[in-house]
Image (cartoon, rainbow, N blue to C red; front, side):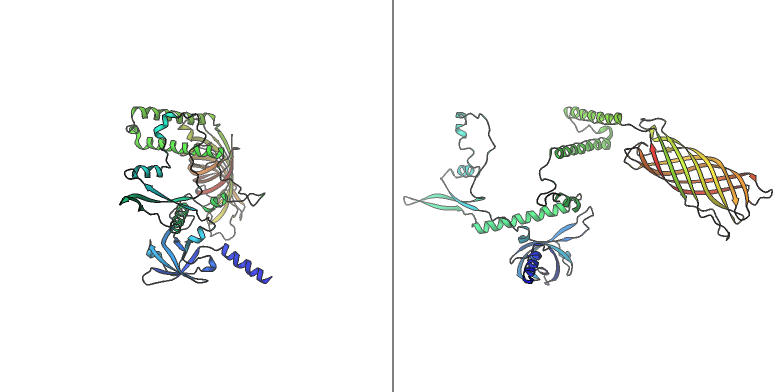
Length: 495
């Protein structure tokens, strides 16, 4: 049982071997390096490898992994190996103790079938060598060209295909030479032997895989989440991928639409950048076609605009908390901690569907406000009931736009009544409230069901004037100004 466990452990360590390696040491010339990967990590004697290094996070949209050097193994131990760096791309990246990725030939090409090769000797006739060589390289496609008028093509069953028992054919070129009334074959070109050619093919395939890996991982749009999602197994069977390698018709449709959108965006960008001179580089025929495309794009936008159902009105219920405090710390007996406001907001768009004026809306609010202020070094409660009238401006999107954070700026004036009271002395007074101007900024997010959220920041100065008091010589001020900054969070419904 113990022996079986050890065997499984060794086999699993080789299968799950990672290519991450640490540079242990290097020679004074920098041409020889020692890494902490050995035979237990799947490295083979005489292995070729390309050493790469991660220079930035894989989440950044920048160059992430770069090649450092090409290497070949000259000595291998169980837990370390010695490599000749026969081509170094960046010597400064080779720092002892740093981590690298060692992409080895044996690891990347594991499981590939050895190609089968054939060898053909072609003896060229004197004076016809170039013609015979051309026919050979073109698979004799022109062999019947002189008699093509004698044959009629009824139908093409399939494209031309070449079938062979071998993966590749090595060609040796020879020519006839005459010597004393006898002909001898003389070699013109000799292809490499099969083992050497197979070795070169294997190395070329290995380098192509590494280049493809670096291109993919350094693509700004690449991320491992989407990469692994494509490799997910099916829920009902672990032997099948959840998504097929073959493109569906719907996938091809989405890809075509994406290409069209990209081409349309480029066309619009060209027109905007050049202004009225955007058409000077086109001929009359090209300009005619371009104007037809522009007309189609404009009609698409018009259909989208006509089919949209913009909302003219919106209600918002908001809860606000204060960022300023007008109370004094000199009053050690009382301080109001619970300060908040509730507000009901109604907004209307007077000129709906106008390309410019629909960005201006009118709104009114009803507010119940509980706050406090200092009077003669004593804190007093202030309860306010007021209304506002104002306007908002939406600089980027129309106010009815859905599923987009819609930013707005606004101004308003406030009018209402308020009551102030000293809790310590039970003295009270009534005030009129006026504010002009009040400023606000915020954004709202509407969903498809016309419900949404709103975040608002406001700044104003409340002007209080007393018109009634519980005492003749009241300690509460006759007039005062309160600076108020507030942040509010609300629920929106548009209709």
